[in-house]
Length: 290
Image 1 (cartoon, rainbow, N blue to C red):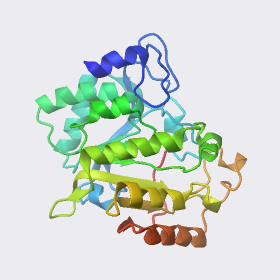
Image 2: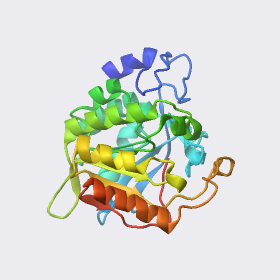
Image 3: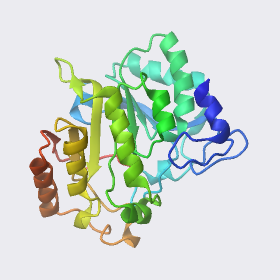
């Protein structure tokens, strides 16, 4: 299997550790088995994903980013859950489908692409048929996205930062903006704008998440302009206002405070003025983010 072969000098995320994961771990701290923290129907995702029966989320442990304000740091930065074989991962997917979930939602999947693909072969052979959501921090390699072409139905990447210095300071990845934009272009090439069925449930396409940060640290204006000018004005954008200090945020002012209403309104105005027409601006007090 091509994805497994790539783990021998791993390039399945944009860190390009080039380690042999059967012998030692790279930055993602993951070997050749996926580690799952939790799974189940999730009713807090975007409306086109959650519908009325929930999105079938599978939360993978560890992450290829080091976001210093991560609200899921117990999962992304610690060894939560347990390692599982591919047949068990396939069984989880089928269980979520049987429970009525509208889709299978892989959360933080960038470092376990090979394990997911191996499990999907098994699950598809046993009747898996609902859409697959690739719910990523947005730091994905072209090599991984090539393997996912024709497999993933819905890409849901973050666009975290427009400035590389901010990315280095807050997520310890300096080239995040350019890698992220390249990945977004490829994702849109593969699946296009988000398409929903007659019930409003997402079936295929691109859905972007952008978390607005205090004092404009995320570079919202540049990001919404990029989406409107280089992707599509019909891009489905969840412009998120629910930033709250978590993990090590108190060490990185102004991340030691919540976003203000004025800051969010300004971000929303930027998106509207850029020409984006599908803005999810619903406010939620709790939202899972990387």
